[in-house]
Image 1 (cartoon, rainbow over the protein chains, first blue to last red):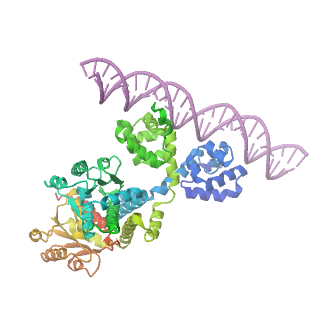
Image 2 (cartoon, rainbow over the protein chains, first blue to last red):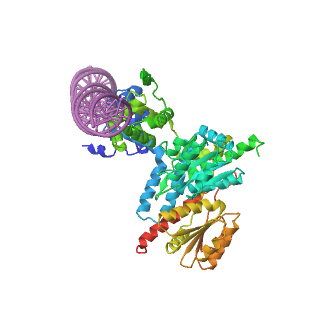
Image 3 (cartoon, rainbow over the protein chains, first blue to last red):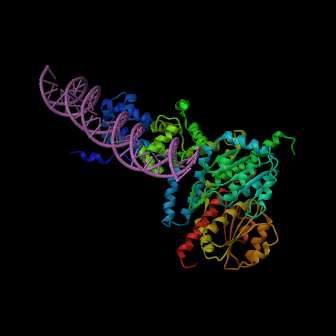
Length: 283
Length: 283
DNA sequence: TGTAATATGGAATTGATATTTCATCAGAGC
DNA sequence: GCTCTGATGAAATATCAATTCCATATTACA
């Protein structure tokens, strides 16, 4: 007869919520109890087992299954899937936006889609770093650089734009810095001048430019403290660094956003300048 | 002897992360593979089953268990609990974070506030440009550049990082380009080679670097079409440009964000490459 | 008040999943 | 070059959890 029910199971949390509220009054006592608990503690449902949830809600596991079935699901597991989806969507809305944009751009949806893709990639990266930045590391890095004589900046290729802006900013802020840029022959000599009283900032992302890695290793071996900005704990830079930051830049069309890295680099530069001003004297 | 290990299983994600990083170098290959995957895709671990995660990470389920045990957990399930805990603690979404950031960026103090300021400036700029970009101009600029022989890139000082990334991207995309960078003496000669079959991208913001303006004027006088990215209709670049974009970058602590300009520049580069691919032939 | 329909609790079952075990393999140390 | 130790893969196993079933209780209705 009314086996039609099987098809209209809610696909997302909002419609599930709506479905529950709609039937609220027509639900049997125990089922209603589950419904109330589900809306109040959606996170518990996402992770718990049927048994554990049942205990918390004060019902039997079988009631949970019945509840799910009343809503049109196959069983408890299917319903739980919706609760889990909700949890991961809360964190990945940007990622989804990005992937649809990618699909659009691939389908040839025009230049606007490409542009939106880069904007979204940059926004994602910024939101990401805003959440994940480690304040203690920031303090450490600033302290370290504030006490340095010369700040050596190491970056090649993809990361080079950040380095050049950093060099520009440090110059404006009257902080002595040395940008190690070209693949030309003088780099080794330049690095040779660095002492433990100096400091270095190295920036590199996978695939790590070998020159940057080599130079960072060399400079670290001379006892120069290194602040690294890289993309993974497994980066070779992380291993030689005194302090390192993990920055996950979203990419689009094969090009990584630099927004998060830029923001971090600039924050470090300005903070170092501020710190030096506070410490006074040293001119 | 070292059976003490059993007790020190990390209780939260941060210490788990720390534990992984600490042992990074001493881990066997497959286990390290799991470690890398776990740190890169923590969400997957929270939700998946041992089998599904193992497939994604390219290992056997047993390796997952071994990994968990190495970290001091009883088994995979216990470790997964930590990943789940992390997910339920992370409450708000990206957008919420950014807007609260914006609210308190000016209120706070310390280095974190500086960092937040830069992130806010960047995301504001991005939001602005996403709203105000002129699609017709975008089309025009892409058409113009897609038909060009060599793309000359003009930018100095503050805008130079964008130019260098643009040059990098164009190179990767196999679009011939020439970056006019140094204040050195050769620029005039370089520009002298440009013909009306080429094109130029000029980037400059107030206060406009005089070299960029002069060069843009010179190249335009030779009949070379110029795409300009600048900040006002009164900009000298707007006057010599064939197409120009207005980009209003927010600044913080005296330094302008480059995020919006970057996104626009990259979108142009990729769109040009796409257009050329569509036009085919031309190799 | 009696009867039927539905709801509920509890246990058995079925299915899936983590874990363990064992055989094989790679590499370090002698 | 050989042996031993530790790592790895694959499959068997034990565990655990969802589901189903059945007996019982509750409610609705006549």
